[in-house]
Structure formats: structure tokens, C-alpha cells
Length: 101
Picture 1 (cartoon, one colour):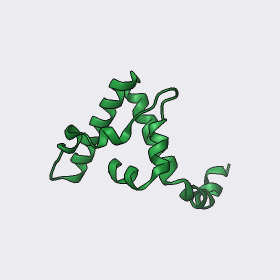
Picture 2 (cartoon, one colour; picture 1 turned 30 degrees about the vertical axis):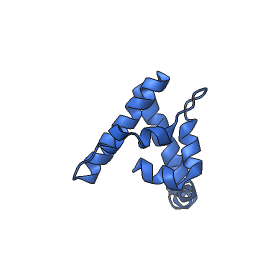
Picture 3 (spheres, one colour; picture 1 turned 30 degrees about the horizontal axis):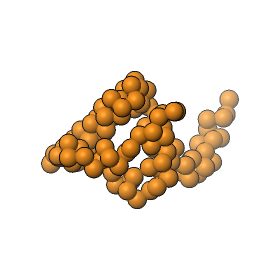
Picture 4 (spheres, rainbow, N blue to C red; picture 1 turned 135 degrees about the vertical axis):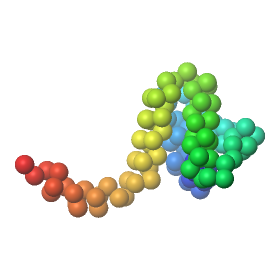
């Protein structure tokens, strides 16, 4: 979940806080809000989806950013941060396949 990763990783938190140029998002404030905390579901996947949707909606209201654009930026930043070290190994594995013609 987003709160787990941002609580343990300051760099990711800072990257998300500044994901929209010229805007500063207070991720911790959104994640610690009562509305966010009350979004519970027995199924972890549904809980995560509801919380992510709530997070995106709050940021859209703060920044007037397009919801789809924000989702793409958020996912791109998260994947880039979480899997940066994996890219080298995957590139070495799949590079010859993708670059062959």
C-alpha cells in the first residue's frame, strides 16, 4: 500500500510530494486523514484500490491536475523508484531479444 512505502522511504515520499511541477502535495496529510483511514475492506486489493482512488481525488482537488495524468505520473514514479535496480538485470536478460532484428 502507498502508506507503507511512503512511511519507510523518504525519497519516494519526496518524489511523490513534488510529482506535479510547481505544486507541493502533502502526502502524509492525505494518508493520515480520517477519511483515508476509514477506507477499509476485508479484501486487500479492494482496500488498496479505494485508498489509491481517494488519494488521487484529493490531489486532483488540490492541484487541478487531470486524474488520468496524475495516475500515470504516480504509477511511473512509483515503478521507476521501486524497480530501478531491476531494470539492469531485466535489460541484460531481454535486451538481446528486444534488440534483435
